[in-house]
Length: 426
Image 1 (tube, rainbow, N blue to C red):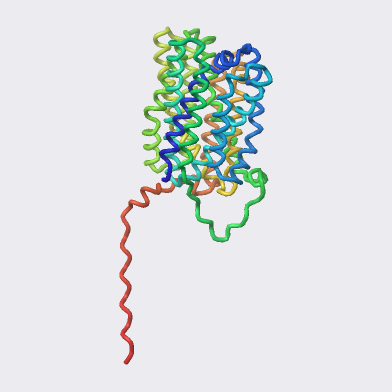
Image 2: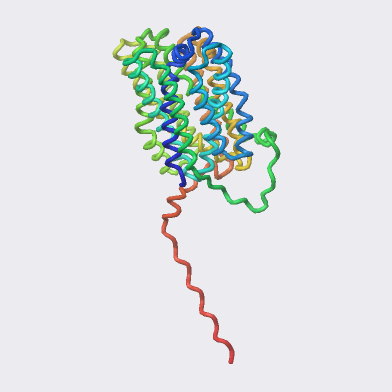
């Protein structure tokens, strides 16, 4: 497909930029701006919540202008924002730059998903989803390694140079995405103009149910970064190195075997609802394993081994669910209002991310195994909901069509020769 490689490389480069600041966000912005940790944390929280308000606007912009122009604009805003951070030494300046950057960051996943819907069709969407996720994990891991090495060599003063490296990464990614070419479905016979705005989304009950089911799974995605460290430190009383090992194993598996796992699922011909449900069930299995581990609480070596096994099961759930779930949401959205549909779907991830810290800490205060029990029930409920939604979602969303490349290379039955025309009467 036209420009697909540019899209993938651009996503990988931008992920390197993201990986250079996300793991150190508070420290990163403290050293870049000179503001206190408390002020940096407050600004990041407020601007992050304000960024959620940009989701409906991003969806409407995609439907009006197409995904590619909006992706380019967001890359430009992110590049400019990071280029200005070293000059935002006052609180108002930092808040202004952080707000604009947060609006672009929160909107970007919606627009990128819409772009996938424009450049890929059928099973190619699942493949592209898996490739993007693998490259993003690899890029974020590489970015974290780069900034760690830079800090080891030059100290905290190097944060200023890494922030400009982020700006350069987003600018390069935008230049690459300019080469992407969208393909559009032919209009269906008799297809009328869709209902205006978000009213069409709000009347689409199957899609809203799909979004609600994804919220249950999205809580599981938040567990690795929020619940794992707290659980290991407060309930298992393990060293912080266990958290680092879990993150490293998850990142390595996502980058190393993500495409292979997604390819195996895609070649199996499984319905997207079934493969996404399988991923949710693997999540539930990993969470149940945490309950067992938290009940037995063996020695440090056995805990490490058990935790690594749980992380492997968890990561497999992520690798099976993510491509199928993403392609399912993109394919279930009508092309004319895809941006609005995916903006609504993204709320499930954003809401789960916002609620996870308070929810997990409250449950953990009661019993260390309680949050895992809630997550296991939520993941199992999501799997059941996905299977029950099969008949209510569009068939082209549930059943991935053969990829464009495969269809083009398939042998074709030669057309029969036309019958000879009858001889003219004399």
